[in-house]
Image 1 (cartoon, helix red, strand yellow):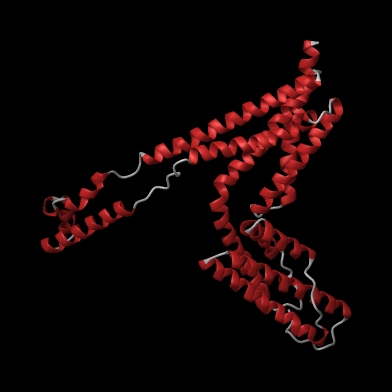
Image 2: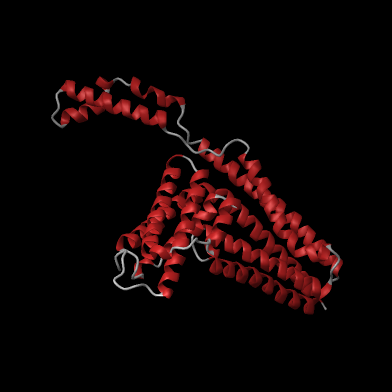
Length: 355
């Protein structure tokens, strides 16, 4: 890696690359500032610190360019990141920024300093940690939303594809799809309600009772705990003092012990959310029949609509998990179409059998 000065005049190609890196550093700094403005406390300080580091990196490229510095335009990749920052918020952008920091070219760039390469490696870990906080806050509701949507898409597409393969009429396919939507959405809602309510009841049974408050009222002199300390060589007075301190600490533990119970109404909220997301997912496969299409055209349209939705949900999961959006989207598509294809085969078999 080189210093911030060059022994020979830089070529036009070098200056163009430096200008590009300068634009990226300036734009990424603005993104971190935007995120910091929406954050608070420690997270705001961390994000502003990242923005300051990006400003130092930008200053390096400015020094290399010297009089050749030009006004920078935001690179398309960073512009998209900024758009997501304004629309979708904190976590989505941090997940994208994490991948961008991990792909930093500074480790192999001859014109970047070793400190800059080290900074980018640390930035990736800092952003990963910030994103992990957001993922932890989001995981429960997000899991239910993605699971409900994906289940509605796949199950109802498989249902209408399978029943369509039997050779029934369009009206039967539509009625079957609507029935599948309602049955599946109600089943999902009931399952989420029972799950959350059962969790609340099980955790509630583990909350310490009022009897925990009598711990410090135990007779220390008649309690074997003091004998333990005396057996270790302490005097009776020292042993009793140590026992009292231990019992007081035990009481404090009971006083501060908290259990993360789902809030009242959480079971109904989970049920409503699952119903809505499943119904939304299950609506897409039957949408062509609802608007008047039929036959093969309607089935092809259903597969296209569901395919697009599967790619979107898979891509979003990929972005938020910090993995490849393309890989996750492709996986969702293969699983969904695989299930639908299997029901088509079964439908054909049953159609031949019934025929």
